Image 1 (tube, rainbow, N blue to C red):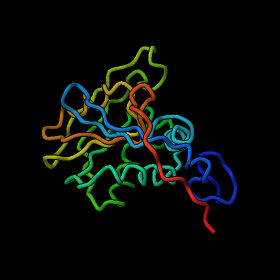
Image 2: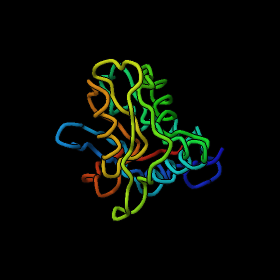
Image 3: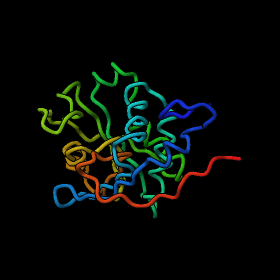
Image 4: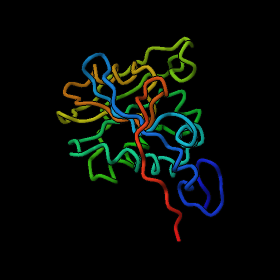
Length: 198
């Protein structure tokens, strides 16, 4: 087994060095109405885990990230609603990180997944430097979603994607992401230090 973030041998999931470098991100309010909880700051090992999932399709990275998200969901919501990737990028990379995270998280906390959103074929990338031109996501609702459900996505940068998703689904109670851009993250909390397995 190797560390999914740095590739160190003899580790499963994350090595202690990478686990100790994870920084809690906290909670943010988007558009004055949508509470978004992010597990980790999008930097260092957390950023590499998201990239392993998002660009390499490594499902094991979703499981590690979901384990950091699960403690934020107490009590659990009635359902998790993944935010889908646009079709062109899903085909290009062979993975859709929102549903992958939602599936891993749902298994951990025993909550159903409702695929209540559909994405368009393409829009300008949302990821990248904060000054870069960013596309507006085109999302639509499909089917019914239980009142009080939570959106699930991989990263929050500006919050535009999550806001667009919440706007088309009545009754969304908030959102959870694996990571948040450093500019959106509050002061780092203290994490229990990793102890090597003996």
